[in-house]
Amino acid sequence: GRKIIGRRRGMTATACANVVPASSIPGNGRPPRALRAPACSTATVEGEITSQKQMLPACAPACKASCSAGLQEYIDGAKVSTGFGLGKEQREKVMRACLTTCGKDCTKSGKFYDFIIPFRF
Image (cartoon, rainbow, N blue to C red; front, top):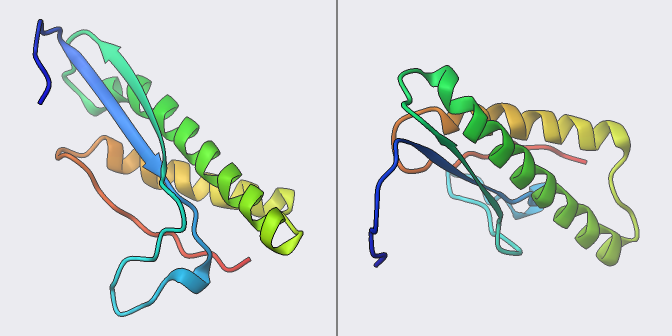
């Protein structure tokens, strides 16, 4: 465990993203096979949090960093295995969907949420 040495008002958001090919999604509601560890990022906002809007300064940077890193890891792996990456339009589409879903889930109460955004490239 961790030793708590002090407390401050605020919120810490940790976001993790992993982009996987559609071929690794088995269906039947089961989770996909992850080919690598997810890319995670943490951001903190200090002060009293009384509304969801006040969570965004922690959620937005954590989501943006983890979605960017997860997508880049997928692109790098695809280039090595197939010789092709993703086009600009495809990257933007996946990034937009990841940021939207991550941002919405980040402001919900609870420890974590898993989500799958299916894309066929």
